[in-house]
Structure formats: structure tokens, C-alpha cells
Length: 191
Image (cartoon, rainbow, N blue to C red):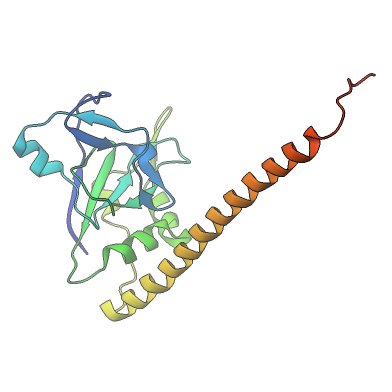
């Protein structure tokens, strides 16, 4: 179901440069996020080889046993590339919807399959691209994949809305605590 899989760039990243580069900490809750970005300078041909397109999936191939296997889908705009400890998976869209693949690889069953191919080292674990390609994915017709993706995306939207509302409520609570307690006389605690 893959058009291609590819290891990322093995170059030194800096605080400045032309292209933002995603690293393993940029995978959060199944999506690629721009936080704590580093940058690299590349030739045009290098950029063409490692640039990300919407729907690309990044797989964290090496890390601690707990973090190896993290997967996220790229939905951002801009000129981004990815680091060497990530593998880019590009779905064959004639057979599988990238979002469906991403949901599956992040599922309990998908993660269980991925974990079968982990090789443990002294301080890190690894899954190579060859073994990753052995993971089996249930493949319903595209129409059913679309239904699954749309249903799960609705849940994602609801979760995001609830998180935002929770943050607002927590901020209101902090404000109320400060407002209420500032009106009382201050006395030292004595033991």
C-alpha cells in the first residue's frame, strides 16, 4: 500500500537555516506539529528528495522502547523536511487513504504489529524500513476507508474542542482563586 518509504536526512540541524526539519519530538497525537523547530540548508535537489507533501506519514524508527513506533501525518503547509531517525511513508492513494493508514498505525492493533519488529539495542530500540513494510493493514474499499476517516476525524475535532474548553475553564478557575483569596486578610501560618 506504499508508493515509497524513505529514511530522513542525516545532516546537522541548527537554530537557523532555510528549511525547517522535523524530528521525533514533532509527532504528537498522530499528527506532525511545528514546535521546537530546527533548520537545515539544502541544495535544491536535496530539498526535492526530502520535502514533505500533505498526507505523508512520518514514523519514528529509533528511540527508547516506549517512543519507537510513534506515527504522525503531515497536514501542514510550507517547505519542511525530516530527520534521519524518521521514515517517511507515502501512501499509494489508489489503494489506501493516508489518514486511514495513519489511524491504523496509531491504533492498538497497528502498534502491536509494529512492536513485533522492534530490535532492542543497549539504550535504544529500532524498527527498520524493511520490517516496517511487513506490517499488515486491513484494506477495506476506499469508500469504507473514507467513512472510517470521517468518523474518526469528527472525534478528533470534538476532542480538540473539549481540550480548548478545558483550558478556558482552568484559566477561569485560576482567576477566581486569585480574585477570591486576594480579598482576605493575609496571616502567616504558625506551626
